[in-house]
Image (cartoon, rainbow, N blue to C red; front, side, top):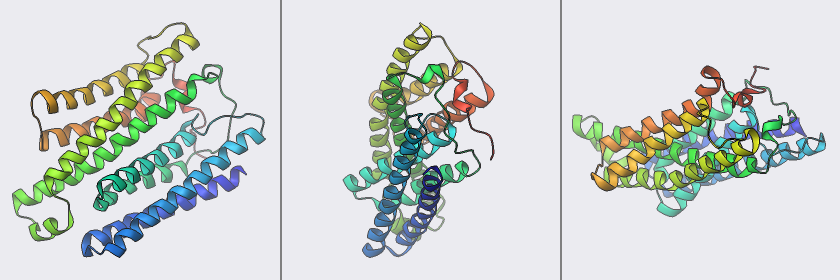
Length: 287
């Protein structure tokens, strides 16, 4: 069953890169049929991806371990990419902007591609992870991260459009293919508004979990510290938007910088700044 889940993850990865190409085709020719095909392709990838997560979870119970599919680097990456696609499809359904898919689906593809280099084995949970707080903490953090990933993709799209407008580079093509800059700015903001409460809840539940596991709510562990720094970056984004009226390039750049902080908190800290959360790199060795 574990091997089957890996095959499903591989299939989802291939479908996401196909979806990226279909979204790109939609950008060029603006055919509603192609747009619907892009959405259906992404949705089919999500369904297969969800099936793979279910199979991996079932495999862990079959092995007598019984754990959710996000307790090491491999499983957290496949869950992260799943959350990104789910978040994107919800935003696409709500705001009817399919063009964003060409900048978001590649992120999920890259995450799944990286997992092909990692061990997919399921190991027993270390004592610190054996808590009911695991589900609430990890799920809320990853949905926050997913929303920030979508915001990053939209912000990159915004900067591309604005740059082309200012420099007069391919302006006709850009105006026809990419959504208006004002709309992109607003969508990036909305994605961050969605993600920020999830990250906040994730940090709070993480503190409660830390108290359960280590007897203290906060120990300034590198992972905790960088999570807080990431939170402050997005808090600064929202404050600048509300209080100072920041829009456009400044907030787009801040959105991208924020996601770089997310990636460092998620991956960089475990590699470069080992601490109480060092168990996060369990099973991250190349096959």
